[in-house]
Image (cartoon, rainbow, N blue to C red; front, side, top):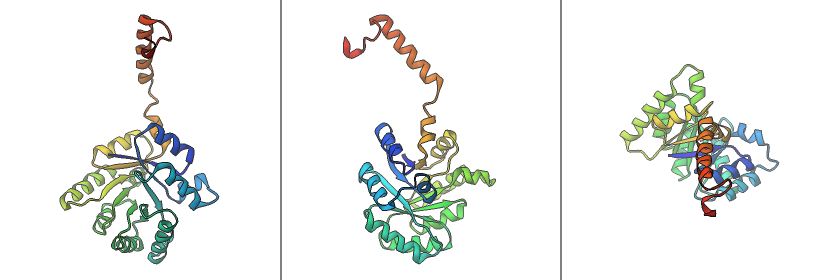
Length: 226
């Protein structure tokens, strides 16, 4: 199970990797726009420095034709490092680009997946990660959990190493359900992860534990003070 954060904000990344078991960082042009770094490649190199090589970094190409996508993929790798996962939208030209990049030994995350057949084509093309857009699928009247179920089943049948990285969430429940239905990874905005801990029951339990302890040993006397 992998928790990946969907942001290029350096403060959010620093805080997330300090507190949480974060396995990587994803981005797309819309996410980059939210932070608007002056120098894109300098910013991405700083993210790599922050997260280290042990965590995954996913960076998306733009454009609508295969040749442009492949050229951008090579530029990304040359500017940052060869361990980056290149995110490619699963369109007609994108599938062609994924096939070319995988033949070249490049790591690929197939993104913008709304339909199971898109996912199957990305799987057959050899994508390392496949990113179904959970909330957007639901908004269009589809069932994202059925898609994840069936894709996970197909991956298991094929014995593939491809991972499902569920994306596009509106809340914690969708993240939880995606993992329960077979996604090996989720890519989530830090604001949604923070919501996990916004729970009055957690605060009450901690307050009760502390009160009981201090009633025995004195206010402000912790275990290390004994």
